[in-house]
Length: 347
Image 1: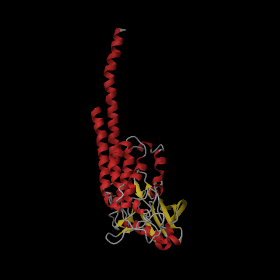
Image 2: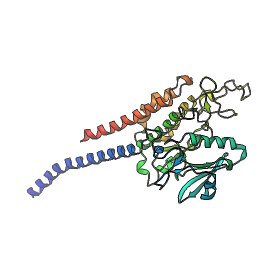
Image 3: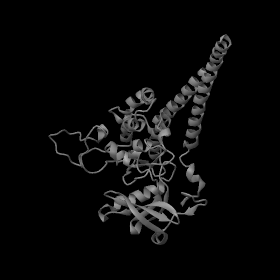
Image 4: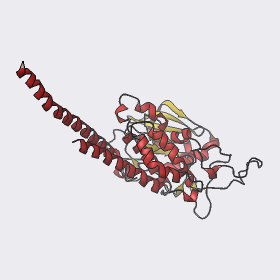
């Protein structure tokens, strides 16, 4: 009896440290896994992915070699529509097939919006990078272009996607903060792009803004709808996002009618503005992307100051997108380091 009792007590003394060690090792392994996966998918160079192919070439899906952008005869003969997957004022989007690859075929909806459509094609050509969906080909005279297909759809599907069994393990602050970084990185790229300083005008509310981005299967954001990216000509003129009055808290203050309710809205009297309108919207988009996962409250705390700076009424006092991006990346790094430090302390 005594021997048995003594054996059990000794086992408890020896077993407890072993259990703690196993738990610490498991936590540490999880941290390493997150760090590895995020490092695997993180984009630091906006041209990195497309450097795999020469300019005006593409490689998508299971392709192993680069192919020149498709032209009108190839699109007409080889791209076959499967089903309608999206429709807006400017274009209809069809899931299509090209040589065994799933692609997205965009078709002009109405001649009324041909100028917007052609602008979108031009921006797709000019802004090819890891921030933007891959262009596969275009035929402007027939009002069609082809891009890489992403089955998860727009960023509006984020919460529903991360609730699925296959993606639930990625519903973490790591994934969500990386998505916010992707969003700000695109803004930084847009504001100093090869096509000049561009403003994201299809962003008058949160829903519309999120619909402009695709959610890739590796949990990154890709700008997709580039139909409304007017150029700021520094020292000459700014931009106006459409010819109608904008309202609401989501748009920047300088986008609101400044002459009061007694003066009817007039496009001629409406002042123009610049890319700092995009900065105003960053905190609202970030809050959606971060959601309510464990750690998101800590991230918001660390981002509070840059949120405040983004929401300054005077657009000239707001930071640049690159400055915001640097803060976001710094917060990401500090969160990773803090998590690693907690694991080291447990060990």
